[in-house]
Image 1 (cartoon, rainbow, N blue to C red):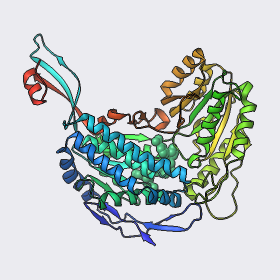
Image 2 (spheres, protein in one colour; image 1 turned 60 degrees about the horizontal axis):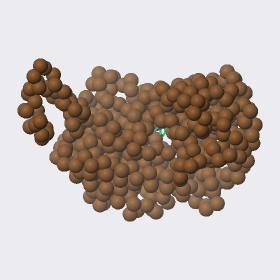
Image 3 (tube, rainbow, N blue to C red; image 1 turned 90 degrees about the vertical axis):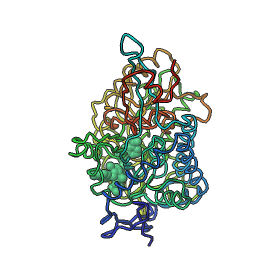
Image 4 (cartoon, helix red, strand yellow; image 1 turned 30 degrees about the horizontal axis):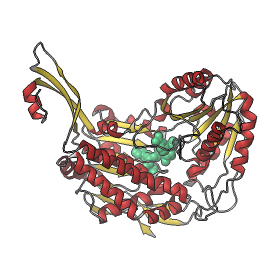
Length: 514
Ligand code: NAP
């Protein structure tokens, strides 16, 4: 069986000790094994800081952008191979796999273009300069410079290619070296991507390292110039955030965690109409794409009470047509969950929802044979139900809950807010008054609000994260913020206020003296 090696301190290296086995979640066939025991993590972080950092900082934004472009090209050239790996190791259908791999390519390309736009500079000028005294001579100017540490990126199992690429794109463009740690169960794709970068020599030595296997004490080794971007469960996020070094050294941390995303159907969207159909399509796509294992997937479906039975029946009809099975087969529309722990967690979560609501479609019951399969499940709650689980328990699988509401935007917003922070909420309506109440009521509790509309061509729906917009959400969602074009660079840079003589500062920064 293949043994995965880490790429640390500029070379491939194998850990020793008890390995974990990566399997095909559709067949449970072992695919590879990995261990990170015995790897020298402090030395690996040091190598990234000392070798990769200076090499990246010596480059302009445009030059760093070229690196990202070459990374995108390396993935593109091996796209089919990566899609096959995602099908085998991630339980992805081919379409799920494209979502991950093409998402990685697109994000790298988008940040490569941003690098080109930022041009020959090596740091960012942040806003206008300000006059600080009576005379214009006393001047202030904010600038952002790359931090001198290493950016550690810890990713979840569901997007091994995109997760690695979207974080690395921002950090490398900002001028910080990266040590990426993919989730172990689906690490084959990220591992192959790293092999491609190394084979094609697309990055300077030390700019990107890869740790496969358990994270061990990685987060505890970070200091004040380092940053940590984490995607995964809220519990792990909280554990990382409370590590003594993270607190004492004020290590900058970005957490992308759980989310109970909501889709709200407006009272004007009548059954059978275009808006209604758009809403149904988005809910069905989010429930089944990647078997619902998307942090942005719709979990709570808010529908005016008068429409609830129709929506329930239409969703059940749509779910009935979803063929669950081995994603290697062309007819399969939904593959298995990523691993056995996920399957157990989904079953347990549906049990919690079922204690307070009714099952409208499907069941979490075991499916005979090998693989971590579960059917899609639609739960149903009564209007004004005092249920807590539906607003507190993210069931990370093909599971959503129908929640009838009064039809007023402010009532819908109050229900969405009970989720205590989401990555994305979506609203389907053209009624101006409803939209104002719903969108501005939901906005403080959401990282993104998607206004669904049938006239948006090729709409990806709320579940797709685009690199131009920020990704992250308050509260339960972790309070983080990634992507969003140039905004994301700030996380990897130190904003410093320069204060002094205006001509001196302007000369230092290469600005025209006015
Ligand atoms: P998890 O157990 O928290 O694992 C996530 C990552 O953290 C993995 O790489 C894992 O490594 C690593 N990890 C585990 N314990 C750690 C520790 N003590 N220190 C440092 N790293 C540690 O999460 P999961 O259950 O695999 O992922 C599913 C969750 O991710 C869901 O709740 C979902 O909502 C969330 N998610 C959020 C987003 C978002 O953008 N907000 C996106 C995707 C997923 P190993 O795999 O080696 O254990």
